[in-house]
Amino acid sequence: MNIFKRFPALKPALFCIAALFVFGGSVNYGAFDFIPALPFLAFVVYAALNWRKWYAPAAVVLVLACTGLYCLKKEHGVLFHPALGRTFVLAEDACLRLYQYKEESFALANAEPTCRTRPMKDAVKAQALPKGTRLTVDRVTVDNGEFGERYVITARTVLSERTRFPLQLIQWQDGAPARESDLRRAVFYDAALLMYWPVAPVLLSGLWKNLPQ
Image (cartoon, rainbow, N blue to C red; front, side, top):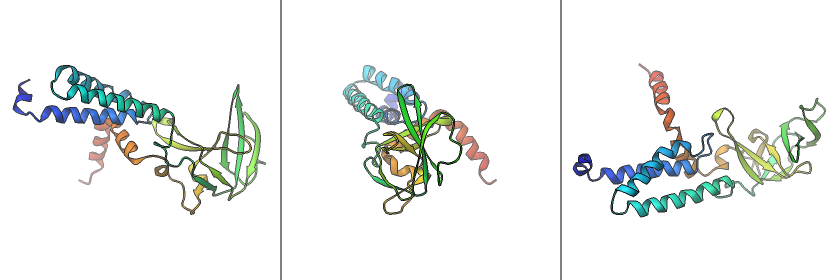
């Protein structure tokens, strides 16, 4: 294309931008996972097949690296969640309620002085945990309710090996409240924000309307 001859730096610039979006898709915990990055992956494949020089090997390295990151993301490992293995403390009295669905069981923790209130539907067992109880982050999961991201800590308790704790219920040993930023790597989270690109016009339009006239 003539435009690439006139602007030789355009090809590597476009390739790098597409690679960044592919990286963002591979680490995205959003509801649509890697799907928003597919057009950019298609562009990378096109460049690898049709452009000369270093584009083909660069595309191979990119795909292999992002595939590895994508698999690690699915494992919810410490690379993505630095709080794994960290000790936390209950900031309030809590009630754990156990739920059993076929062969799967888990418990949910709620801020509650006792477990004497009427149990939530389908709960098969309940147990109180006092404020100050120390537990260890065993897993970090991401809930995509309403297409957002809500980070949930899972820990082993006497009631269940899979007890989920909302962030507002816990704090770290130094007294600092737990925040979502403590549970994720900023480099991956920031890159994943690129997957909002399909709704960028709507977001920019709303921002423009809210600017002072």
